[in-house]
Image (tube, rainbow, N blue to C red; front, side, top):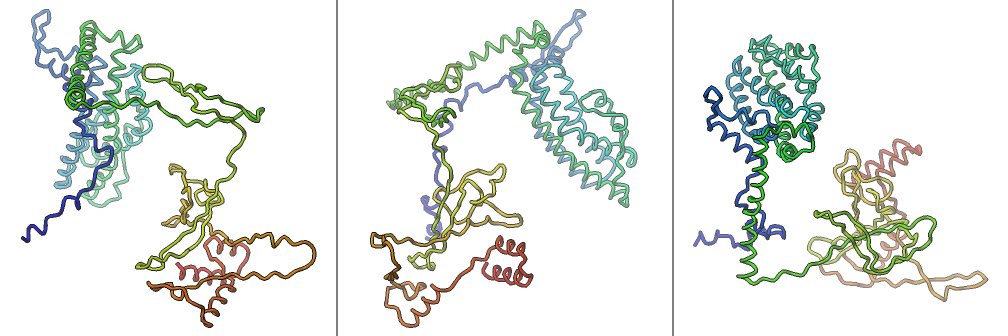
Amino acid sequence: MSQCKNIIHPFQNDPGVSQRQRLIPELDVNAPKIDGRTLADLLDYFTKLSRHINYYDANLATSDWQPFFNKSTPFNLSSISKYGSAAVEGKFDFYRSLFYKRPGKRTLQLVIHYMYYSTIYRINTWHKSVDNSQLVFEQMLENLVTDRLMDPVKSFIALANSAAREHCIKSINFTPLAENAIWNLQSSDLNAVDTSLRARRGSRNRLMGMMEALSSLWPAMIEAVKLLSGAAEHSIEESLFSTSEELKQEHTPHLALLFAFLKLFQHLQSDLNGFTKKHLDFFFKDVLRLQPRNAEADKAHIVFEIQKQLDTHLLKKGLQVKDAKDKNNAEILFELDDEIVVNKTQVEEVRTLYLNSELAHDNSDLSLLEGVYMAPKSDKADGISKDFPDGAAKNWPTLGARMGRFTNVGEASPEPYPYARIGFVLASPVLLLNEGKRDITITLSCSYRQDCSSESVQPSVLSASDRALLNTALTTIYYIVTKEGIALAQKKGVTKETIQLLNTLLELEG
């Protein structure tokens, strides 16, 4: 019985499903592909297969078919896209953990050499394989090196040289980087030595400091590898069917034949993957007998602006408005649903007025008006003059609100909208008086609640003491104290004692 009491009802623990989650991925015609291999997968498959096929030259010497693909740009891009950046990152973390377990020359050398040959040297090799290819990938690689990697690589060279000199690890030959113009390395950069760690006492402390410096450089290097691995796959199609004559000449006859086969194979692959859609169509249309809904035309909201020399202009119903082209390169046209007369009318100001009501206390249904807030310029973050910050959504509450969208420097919460001055206006034909001087007495009949903090609130007749309190409240002049008001008063020359008193009152009120 005790176990049954601990069972949670499924309705009480069901987080619900959004509209986008209601479509099961298996029912998407593009999700369960029968053959989901991409072009990069197929090229990588041929590269791996070439290692196991014998090639006999004129002297019957045996080798394999890998040399046929080594200098091919599409195969090089495929190799880059399949570079396991996750495995590289995991292996670096492993080598770094070995260093912290046993700091020394060997573990430090292992980390430095792995960093260089798995990222910097690898990126340099990738650039050589696509150099002068005029591909988007080549331009992206060069921009990445110039903007993100040049400074970290120079810092890495200085650290590696320092480790070779002070800790006697095996030095690295950075000549391949110097021979590549994209790194912009001078002889002073290749021979630079980091001397910032010499101030640390003890060999162990200098080793730990060097590992900290190397670890700070690693994120930029591995992130560059990830970006290039992801971007390489998108340039494979471009390299296969490029308009560049230089790339076309790289396609030797045996590779051109292979690429033609892949192009034809993609048509068969597309037909094979189309069986999923055919199966779903059969199930929904023939078995379940579901009928598709009629097509609905697209709708667009268009804003017209009239020319300066015109006051009005008539746009008739059915007028066609041209949009962009669809995926079939056909023109998209929209028609006006109704006739419209365009004029010069524009929205001059957008303002809001908001009445903030709050409950008298937690267990009461009685609501009291806490304050009235206005936004003279609703399209401003503070409702007055402050613009929305860059990157933030430039929207405002249509019906108004208490708090604005502007947060002052040093504050955790946004500033409230300005307080609105409220009152009432009396209008009556009786007040249309001509000539003379008259005294007009207006009596307002109001009900009064004795105790707003009580759960049972009933209107009652005012006692003498209550009437005196109410008269005092109505005739008292109140001043709103804000930070902006205090700052303005200080500029006007109000004494320091008064400013300090106002700040104290504001803190007590807060």
